[in-house]
Image (cartoon, rainbow, N blue to C red):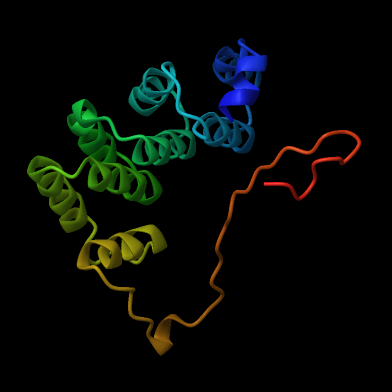
Length: 168
């Protein structure tokens, strides 16, 4: 990735600019996820701005929190706790993952507070949060039968002539 980024010095600026050009939540989430693939100096401020913005849709803020989980910033502990406490289940779960990545006692306390707030919820992200904090998978009950869905985000780069396809 670094070799590719040296060839294109403006790449770091493309994601915030592209984000401004897209109003759709799905496109904005994908742009945030793509921005987090490579660590660079502008990544943490970009993700922090999105996490703090109450004007952003919650799914975009959750994508920013997931990016902060991959690139932890201990100074954002309070911001992550506040966003998780004020947000819905997906944002709360993403903030807990970012707090767990910080690995401090205060982050652990914030995780416990957020997990306690989600006890008894039937929302899938809250149930997953409870399982994550307990350290084991959520128990499935016959009363909750139904379809289970998982989403995987994979991105790759292929050259036009497919000369380097499969190389890696």
